[in-house]
Length: 182
Image 1 (cartoon, rainbow, N blue to C red):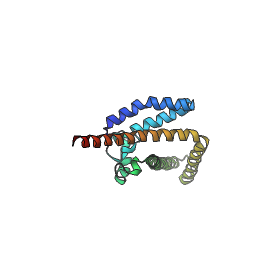
Image 2 (cartoon, rainbow, N blue to C red; image 1 turned 120 degrees about the horizontal axis):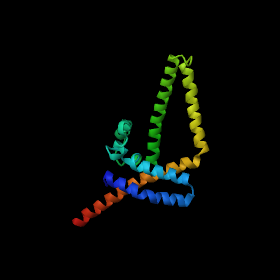
Image 3 (tube, rainbow, N blue to C red; image 1 turned 120 degrees about the vertical axis):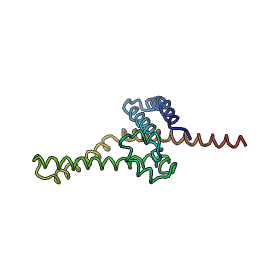
Image 4 (cartoon, rainbow, N blue to C red; image 1 turned 90 degrees about the horizontal axis):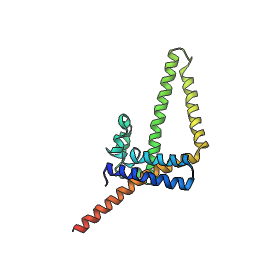
């Protein structure tokens, strides 16, 4: 299994290839940026090794604690962490839950503070309207930009696949070398 530094090198050296192929296929700078950005993010911070104490995990800094339940709930190199498509979708859903939680807490606290200072009469109504607006805007964005969302998803999956493929190749080479030495 390659080290974190090796995975980072693979990601960084592969990025121009991913960007070039994406631009060649799409002729779109925006889509190329989304695929490349997703690839880079997945390769450096959002990849399969979030299920262990890894470089990817450490790069989350003060927010790395959000990945503790993920680490404890998944076996390393399981289908749910390293599996093609399944692993990436799982991480997207997991992170989405945390984002919804943080946004919800922010909305509630903001509304309570506004009521405390007399800016609004009832914090519960403000929370209800704000949550509804956030949900509508999120769904509307996905409906307005499905190709862009798909491009980002492809970039995230390519970054994760690059990681998993290098793990698999590294393990095969080690096994082959062990057999050869016997």
